[in-house]
Length: 133
View: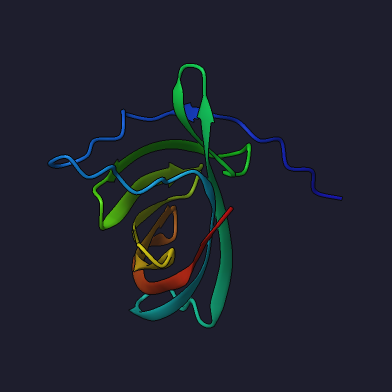
């Protein structure tokens, strides 16, 4: 049985332009990654959930498997929030660029790069989903 132990990564502060308040990034960023062209042979879809929480020290990013290291940044305006994160493990790197609009609809991309003694490969995908409360 696989157990997930969440860990938190503190994020940069949220910034807003002008006098309008920034869109709130707090919640579960629930998305589906659909693999496209690439040379890793990855097909189909992968369900991904990452969470942004509001902590006394600022915003925090969680949801990554404990065998991965991660870094993340979120920036918000009155119209959208952008979440960029990179996760790595012993064999590869996953890079994501997700955007949530005022309707809390997520769009964006994900990119997988794998390196092993047998060689390396890379594959991109399209992300769609919802920012849930």
